[in-house]
Image 1 (cartoon, protein in one colour):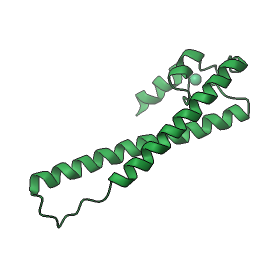
Image 2: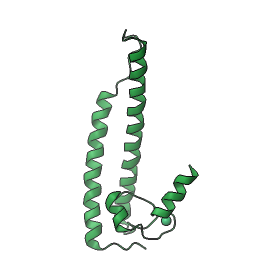
Image 3: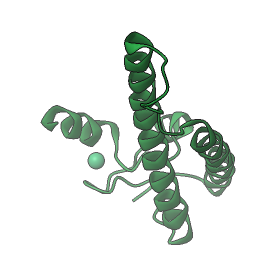
Image 4: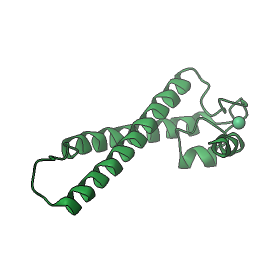
Amino acid sequence: MADLTAAQVCQLHDQLMVLREELNCLLADSSASSQPVELDTPIGRLSRVAALQQQAMAKATRAGQQQRLTLIATALQAIRQERYGECRRCEEPIGYPRLKVRPESPFCFDCQQQFEKKR
Ligand SMILES: [Zn+2]
């Protein structure tokens, strides 16, 4: 069971919508700038390595942003199903302070810790 008041859910819902908007903008921006590195361009070996590294980093950032968007979509769905705020693993309340920092959190603090230890 979640322990959130209607006002808290409403506020976190707004936060999720803003977050989703921001991430969509970031992804749209980065897809424009993450063109493949032209291997034929004579930019020198070092700068080519740097360019590839930069591209790999941009790719990782995008993957993280996309993952976050998925979590946000799941959280918004949970709000509609009135199950928002409960941990998807142990069903205990995630807690408002934690949701305020990361409104898309699907797990309570304890479960998240265990999850990260396993990886
Ligand atoms: Zn849990």
